[in-house]
Image 1 (cartoon, helix red, strand yellow):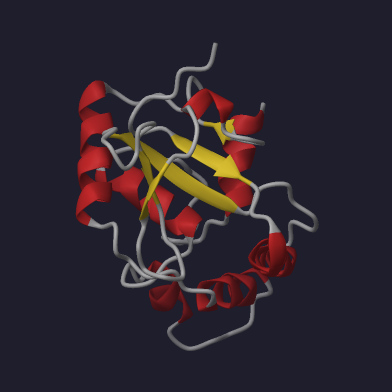
Image 2: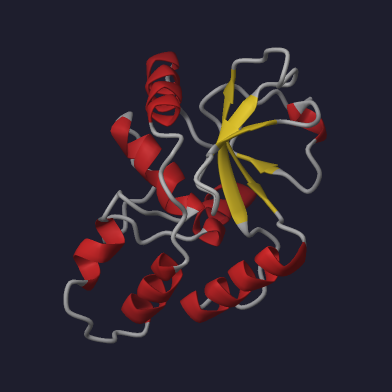
Length: 175
């Protein structure tokens, strides 16, 4: 039985037009069709508004903390990092604390174009700094950065800071 813990992340599909736009962004990045367009970090903390707890990520409306509408184990089409990415209790707490303090980072579709430009080796001035900028992110950059703040490096391939899309995270935990 899957038992996600606060600090675990989840890859999910996005229905509708927004999901299609993210699919286009991931296609530009080089993944082609992907089943996961979004990544969130589970922070737990159930209350009256979120009886199953909350996740935090980046969203176009700037409100990154969202109540789960079902138990974590029942989230449709979810791919959890649970049991795949090792984090200590202390690291989990640091991930959750960082997310709670940064639930308002704006989503940036422009980051997808920047990531695609880097992948295609287009020499854009300031590209590395734009991708690494934490004032705007896509969801996968948010998750990667939250983990880095807790001392967990998800990638050891010398990639640029922030050079991560949802499928990069899904690939880490699929197998």
